[in-house]
Image (cartoon, rainbow, N blue to C red):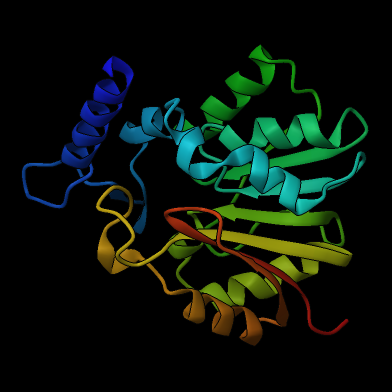
Length: 225
């Protein structure tokens, strides 16, 4: 009873924090002329409750990663998925953890050092370029980041060059209208729009998963070599 009450109160507080009224801190801010996640809410990305709706273990399992795989965690934030990828691909694998914000890059470096994630390489991404080596990645992963990319078709064509033969792109985004918590409604993209943009970038949809309560989860492959 007490545990359920605590969970309810926590959800109410989150709903109050992640609102769109003028008195609320925005979930996205202008950073160097681009709209990005507000780092003031980094605590939310690391809150214990995230595991219940993000289902990270199931997400990782669904991706069928192997030891020695190379994964790019685009817009990695504080490293919530980065650390899990690091442990999954093992000491002979590699995780590129990228972000564009200085505060996120510093947090990623601190996390990697503090937790001994020696197979994590922190990379400063660019707003128009993933800044990763060509033909280097088995998986390029976006969790609630894809919507923040402005010229998405052009960007994803560059991502395509980053992938090894047989490489994949995974995109997780909030569904429009799914919950008041999260990104503002005007920034949310329908899954159909994402599929169309990826098709225009040279990808084909491989899998579509619906086990996440707030988000859709899409996996794409290169359409042509």
